[in-house]
Image 1 (cartoon, rainbow, N blue to C red):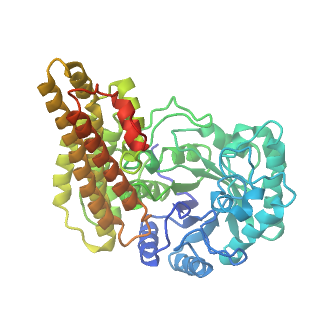
Image 2: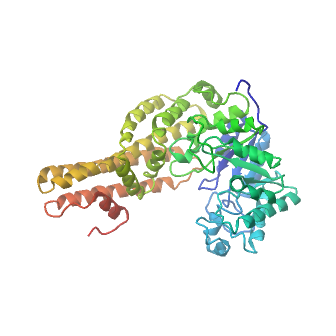
Image 3: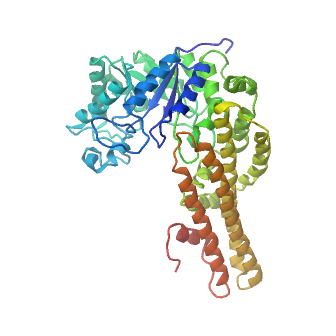
Length: 527
């Protein structure tokens, strides 16, 4: 690429559906920075996390209200940012179908919370939701979802007709509908049911896929939007990877910092529309730790950087903060030195901090893989922490980014400590062999293992305190801290159980390590 291009739609999507609350002060910071980075649109992903006027009650306190929506649209206009709502009327309807009053409308044959679109009341139910959003957001656009739906050969046409009918209803009312493209990309015949004025949001979070973009263009859809993601849910920090999904191409290498590469695929197909998606705000996935990725995409769509322009940290830093900080350098280091080691581990290791059951799952994984590479993590974290300590943030935006990155480093350190404690299963096995041959060595090893779990608990308590500061004044889910405390309690129980085993090791044979973990985590009696 020798030239730089400017996209027509330079949009960003923020997820308010998954436990995030709406904090106006925080949103102002987002809008100002998105505008500076060249974005001209904000998709507000809500699903059912909304204070509906026609449906009493809210799924949690702090969800977006109609007043919030109107305020947000006005604030967007001040910055030339087009604000539009995003919901779902087929799949991803857990906010509704976890409620007893709507249970009859859910599809009992689908593994997730999905609308039974074969029910005669389904259209009325969906349109009621639709009208709530079109009333609250006077923008003339509504994304109605439709992604990741469980379909069969028998009902896939009915699905397409149902979704297309909702789109047709909106078009008749002067509203431009949008849908995710994955389901009709995987089964191209379903496209015949849709009006070509429906906007197609073609998401691909796992590498390049120019074929789908070309497909939707060839089908005659007037408005195709290319939708990459920061992939923040995959680990502790944004990270793009080339694993295939939905027939995605895995033959083109994607480097961790090249979030804009799917946008480049769109450009090669003359699709100059992009929506960068940011998902989840829970279990340590803090949006404020992801802004390097958002900056890259915004600058690319605005024609200020080239696709694949490597390691231009200073340009990203100047766009984010107006000066150079360690933020982008640390982001890249985490991507390349930690998350690039093996893709599956960062996600599992993050789960160790928030889900007691993850200790059992992680043990089973490391036992199979005998993976000791995470012992490389501590020196990396120590080096990056020193760099971060030298950063004295200026202003609220920098402060949130700095605190979020500090929490990320603390959480990686804590998860590494837990992983190392679990990795001591090898010492435990050695202790079992020596139990009746050399009781003193067996006892010493068991107490050392118990100490590792207590050390991991202390690391996690520290991480929880740092993470708590980072999320205190933002809309990030406040369920993270109770979850981390729950894991701390589990680590203490494991340590206590190992000490109990040690106290009886002169007569009671050591139980298997995985059996011991399972009993503690799931509150089972050992014998």
